[in-house]
Amino acid sequence: MRHSALDAPWSVPGAVGRDGVASEQHGAGRARRARGEAQDAADGLGGDVHAHGERAGARRFIVDEQHLQAAAGVRVLAHIPQVRRVGQGGSRLTHQLDQPSAFQEAIRALYAECMLVDGDPLRTLLVTSSHPGEGKTFVTLALAHFAAAAGQRVLVLECDLRRPSFGPALSLRAERGMSDYLRGKARPEEIVCRGGVEGLDAILSGKPAINSTELLSHRRMRQLLEWAAPHYDLVLIDTPPSQVLRDARVLARQVDGVLYCAQWGRSQLSSVLDGVHEVQAAGGRVIGLVLDRVEAEQYRLYNAHTSMPDTYLALGAS
Image 1: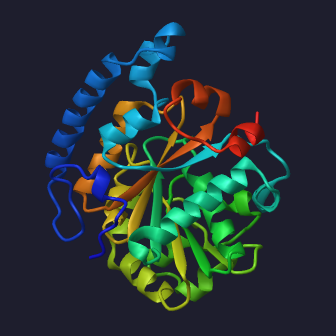
Image 2: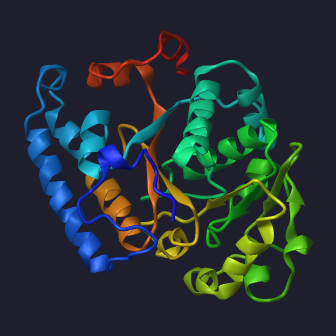
């Protein structure tokens, strides 16, 4: 088992790794205690929050990065700014990552963090969030595009088998995908699609499956990761929200690390804390949090204690 230097300053008493899995009940207890501590911390918020009459919102929603890190016991690795919609499908991501911008710098920073864990790059990385609409799929695909552009051989897996979205996002169509493979009706090499960027391959979800948790628990999922190991430098896995289905928790112990996404200003603090600790209780190694759709000016209001590059504030998308 590899231990991350990133984990040490933010370790949670009783936090679990893949070699010692606590019960999910124990993890839920930690989440409740963490929420209580977070509430106590929020009660002490003042300054600009009080001046703007938004203390209640600060208690409920994620707006204070330092507070979030202390409560979750996990570092924030990147702030993904809100971006304009330019183009469609895969061309949208390609355009945004090709242009010097706050978005490009944020994805570069996230990629660097993932590559620096233990000084040994992660090979399999799962991306999830608490609820739909918090940016997990966008972050997964943006990271995949950037890694491929950096010369990595990347495979991205759509394991959200109930609500597929990779097809439109990557401008791809496939008759068969993950669900077909997990049912034993296809081989890995038969369902891999070229992602439109050199070095990037994808496996789409296939036919929607209501028994997604059972399928993803099958040994064939582990065998797929073993098959991918010699062919790819990085495997990224997009899963359903962890607070909606157990799928992310089922897969978390099979990968090197988990990125947990939250939407700045909209995701509920209690939900994120629950999600992080439940993934850990299931045996997952949460290497960091990703704040998505950050509005630069509002971020500066709530996070005066956090140093941010001038280029980020200057280039933050509206």
